[in-house]
Length: 139
Ligand code: ATP
Ligand code: MG
View (cartoon, rainbow, N blue to C red):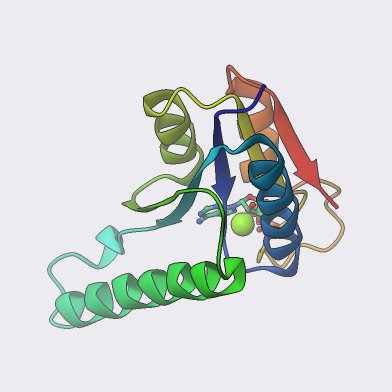
């Protein structure tokens, strides 16, 4: 039923819970798990002297987030593909889902965003809206 599962991971508690769910489902269905993390290019700072440094910092933080997720997945009985993407979160999560012909996207209700009042974060809201496959949003 599930062959390709996309897990959107931002390092938050919510996405960690999503990781645990996605792992259990991938195990059960012997699916491939696509672990996706997106980081923003600090393009508004383009031209500033510190741009390169900031960019490198952001990229390595993003890589560390993925390494951390991989470590939290531990040993798996299913294949894991890691996707580090640069740009717009929703767009790129959906693009990975499209490219791998995902039959499920798993993500958290919220993420690292500071606005606690929101019931569902903006990335999740948009993915739910635009995805062409089922989306599991984990509390
Ligand atoms: P907002 O970003 O709107 O301020 P938020 O951070 O609380 O609010 P979202 O960003 O929508 O909420 O996060 C919900 C889920 O979306 C996360 O648990 C994670 O699964 C996924 N997600 C968010 N940001 C990223 C990202 N940069 N890369 C991959 N997945 C992400
Ligand atoms: Mg967010």
